[in-house]
Amino acid sequence: MRNAKSCIGNASAPWTGLFRFMALISLALTLTACASLTTPSEARAPLPPSLTAPCQPLPLLADGMAGTVLRWAMEAIEAYQDCAERHRALVEAVR
Image (tube, rainbow, N blue to C red; front, side):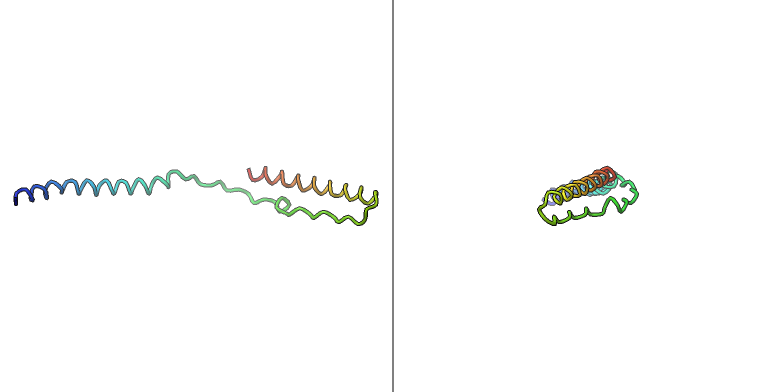
């Protein structure tokens, strides 16, 4: 029996070294995989403050007179177009 135990003990010694080697290789590959796959982000110029400014609130309608409603609608359309243009420019700047 003694010879059988010593044979098993001697036979497992090379496997221990192999497992240790494989564990170190796995660890090294795992740690370097993340470093090689990431790309540095490009440095972007800061966005102009005019593009990041919030849109102006719509003016309140003073009364229900036709002329007042027409002027209000024109101001609202102009404000919307200005805001939409700034939003489009911001989207283009971010891309």
